[in-house]
Length: 168
Image 1 (cartoon, rainbow, N blue to C red):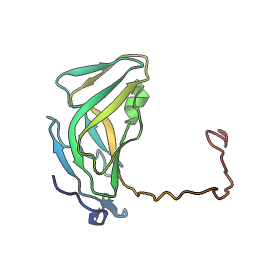
Image 2: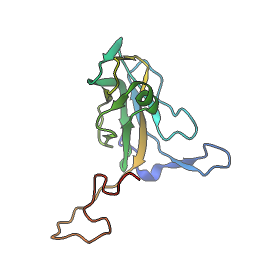
Image 3: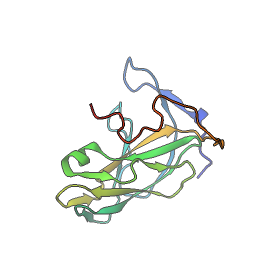
């Protein structure tokens, strides 16, 4: 695999007539599965769906978690990350979601994409080869320079967190 593209290599595409152009970045992919390449399901999709790569099927029991292989390997450009996110239909209809969400794929990671699934539902859930189990959103990212300090500037929020603004 090559060295990847830089963020400046992004091109732009119009996904719908009359809509603004959106950035498109080239990503090298190896697909060792017997499934087709991932794709965006609609013109406006933020993420592309990835599929389970299994010899048979797996049953995910309620309250249990499992690491599901995809057979996919990505080479992300420097300055980008990929986030592995749950699919809303699996969550709503079956209580299936992902742990460590979103799961981050760093630009220097070259291993197989695997999906850490959990069953929060009340029934066992069967995962079959080719099932679309997660979505991947590619985003630009930055690295920060951390500067040691003795104090931080004030803000209206301050240290309030974990629901301090209420639910209404």
